[in-house]
Length: 354
Image (cartoon, rainbow, N blue to C red; front, side, top):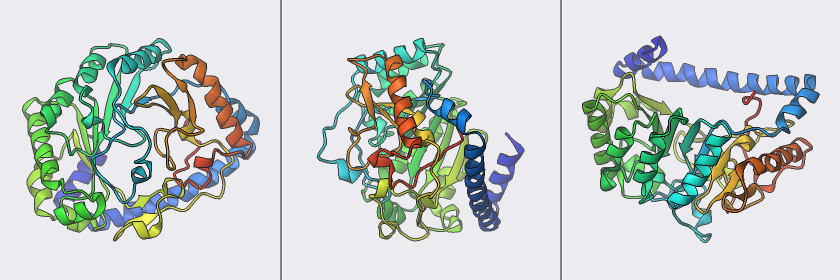
């Protein structure tokens, strides 16, 4: 365990956390402003180099998979509710294998079950996909991000541990039922906590090296969260090398779909960056959608994921042929011809890829 993590766990178990997170939030704000200053000057100082890098055929560091485009939550900070009329489904094994095998052939080593929207645990074929990819020596890292509601479905939590997934991220509002329902707008808290209890218990029984991180999207203060009965009962005893917790209080606007009034309590809406000379880093990310379509940006949509960021379909084109299309979209971005979904998005980041 790193010294940084030891200090964090000590503070979470003590009564000093409110002071720590005040300092951390201040530090993050300073770092954010400094990063944009650095971005501004580096883009102007290395304009030719920047254009060359951002408009090249670059293999994505991680291939994202949307194995399920259906979600069992209705979060106040998410744009999923605006997509309910578009086609939904689950990714079949043939589509998954074709995309994965092509990615490996190009030298890819990392995959993430993290759809633009939807929850991977709802995919009835997830267990088979996990079993297949875990046996591939070429894949060095496997991760999944989920809301955790379906952890107990067919004991999928055991499959996550047994197939030695490297990283599991669980997004939830809080360890308080009322706060959870206020943010996720579903009556699934008790089911979620049963799944978390089973997952952490099984993780400990198996001496698993899988990293599990709880990403909290709560309207409440840190002190209220870590002093809640369920945090003390279900989470605190397991905090350690491979069990962590992260707090989020700043949220993006999903391309303009989420407004300030949609959020609750301490949740704040990020502003839209004024300086966007360089292409967004997320335009380097490939996400294979449930039907085989391949889309840039595995993070955000605006009403539909079948938009101008679609660069092909794995059933009719090869991944290698899509790299050039991705580069052309990044080039347009840098020429101030932003894709419509990007124009009012506050989730913009740049300069971290290289």
